[in-house]
Length: 565
Image (cartoon, rainbow, N blue to C red):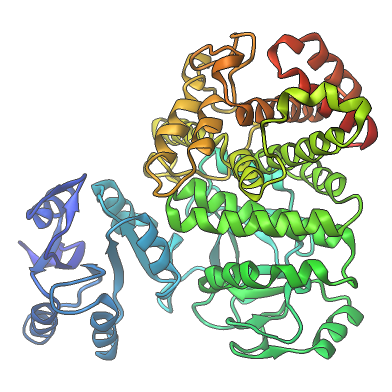
C-alpha cells in the first residue's frame, strides 16, 4: 500500500469481536475492504498491541488515528490499556466494544466523552459512519477547527431554559439557530427533530464548555436533599463548580438556593446514573419536604418516572425493572401525602410533550386512581353492589398495586419499539445520518403526535404481542404484568386485538388498564384536534360500554365526575 494514500490508520485489538452476531476473525479484512486506503494493524491482546503500537510509531514514523478494542481483553481491561496509551502523550480516537447494550450504557458513564462505545453484535455501518466522517458528533479536541460542540437531543427533554444558543446543522458549513439563550425549550419541536433523525443540536464551545471535555445535564435544585451526601459534582449555570462529589448538602445551602431563586443546576453527563440512584434512595425525603410546592414536586416526579420508563423500554432487563418498583413506592407515597396530587400529575402530563413515555405514566396514574375508587366504593353500601364483581381482586395489596402501576408503565413497550424501528428504517431510506440502525428493544424519544412516519394498522396491532415477547425475556417479571402488556387492547365484547378475546378470557388487571389506556388516548387526541373534552370522552366510553368491564367503568366515571383529571 502506498503510504501517501493512506486515509485512516487503525490499531485493532481483536481477541473476540463478533460482527452481526457471529464470531468473525476477519474484522480487519472487512475494514480494509469497506474503507479504502485504510491501514489496519491487528493484535490479539492489549500487551502485544502496546508493543506494536510503539514499534510502528518509532520505526514507521506513523501515528494511528483510531484504536478499536474490546472493553475486556484477554490480558487487561480497556481502562488499563487506555491509561497506558494516553500516557504516551498520543492523540487517538477510541472505539470500545461492549458485551451488550447494558454494559455499553455503563461504560459510557465511565469513560471520557471522546470515546465511542458500541455494543455487540457489531455492524460495519457503525464503524464506517464513525471513521468516515461523523466522529465530530461524538467528540472534539484541540485540532477541531470549528467553534461548535454537539449537544445530544436526548439531554434537552426536561423543558428548561439553557444559558446558551442552540443551533441545528444543515450541512458541514451551515447551522441555523433554533433556540435562543434563556428560551424555554419546546419539547414538541425536539420530538419532531428526533423523528427526522436529528440526534444533536450545536452550541458554541465558549458557551457550553468552560471545563474541557465535559458535557452537562440539567437537574432541579429542589432534588438536592438536605443532610445527605451527594455522589456527584454539581455546577451552576455558567458551569463553575458549586458542590463537589462527597459534599453533604445542609439546610443553609438549600435556603440560599431558594432565596436566590436558583431552580436549575447541572451535573456531568457521566454522573446521570449516579443521580438516578441518588433519587431512588432519597426521593421519599424530597416528597416529604413541606417547603417544596406541589407543582414542583409533581414536575420532578413526572421527570423521575419518565427517566425510569425510558430506561426499561430502552433496555428491558431485570436491573432496569427493579427501579420501577422503587419508583412506584415513591409515587404512592406522593399521592397519599399530597391533596390533589393525582390531578396535578395528570395536568403535568397533559401539558408536556405527547410521547409514549408520558402516555405510559398517565395510564399508570389513572389505573391507580381507578383502583383507589373501587376500594372506596366497596366501603360504601350504596355503591358496593356496583363493584361487587371485583371483590375477588385484592386491590389494596402491595402486589396488586405494583402489578397495575408497573403494567401501566410498560403496556405500550411494543408500540415504542415499533415506532423506533419504523423511524429508523425511514431514516435509512431517506439517507439521514442521524440513525445508523434499529435494534429490537431500543427506543428513542417517541412522539405520538407526529405523523411523519406511518405504521400500517395491521402491523401496529401486533404491538401487544411484540411487547409481551420482549418483556418475557426479563428475569423475574410478574406474569400478570405480561398479561397486561399482551391484553391491554382486548375488549370485553371481543372486538379488540391481537386475539379478539372476550371478557372471560381477559384478566381483571388488563380490563382495568384498558379503560385508562382508552381514555388517555382519547384525551391526547383531543389536545391535537381540540374537539374532545372530558365530558365527550365519557360519553364516548358510555356509548362503547360493551367493550369495558362495567364495574371498573362505573368506578372510573364516578372518579371523573368527582375529580377533574
